[in-house]
Amino acid sequence: MAEAANRRTVAVVEDDAPSRNALGRLLRAGGFEPALFDSAEAFIEAPPRAPLCLILDVNLTGMSGTDLQGRLRRAGSSTPIIVTTALHDACIRDRAEENGCTAFLWKPFNSSTLLSLLGAIAQDPTDY
Image 1 (cartoon, rainbow, N blue to C red):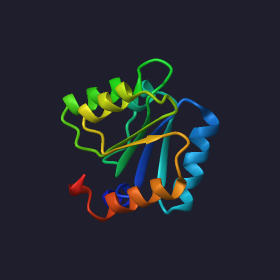
Image 2 (cartoon, rainbow, N blue to C red):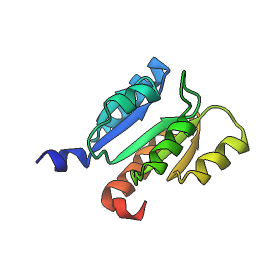
Image 3 (cartoon, rainbow, N blue to C red):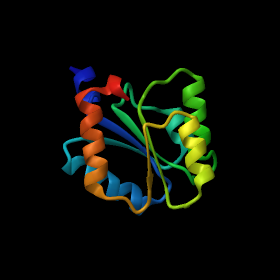
């Protein structure tokens, strides 16, 4: 039963509280269960068990989002990762893609785009 519930859990690592809370509300409205973290370090300390996906901001206080992404991949994680950033820099996108992100979204992004992407991941996570 817990494993089925985790298939709808989406971890969010975002240090901006208003953005993090808005994502939490959006995910709940879209039928997902958000697990919200204010830093990469907080996520590392208590990650959710087998989340459907991780939404990861690049510019975090402390460890950066791309550093966390690389750490997770080196540890063998295959959890789909959606990387987000307001920093319009192709080098950041390239680094996230080299680390195997599922998708890269520039902020502000369209809510329906994110929910559609999560819906596709939920349909068949092995495709991502």
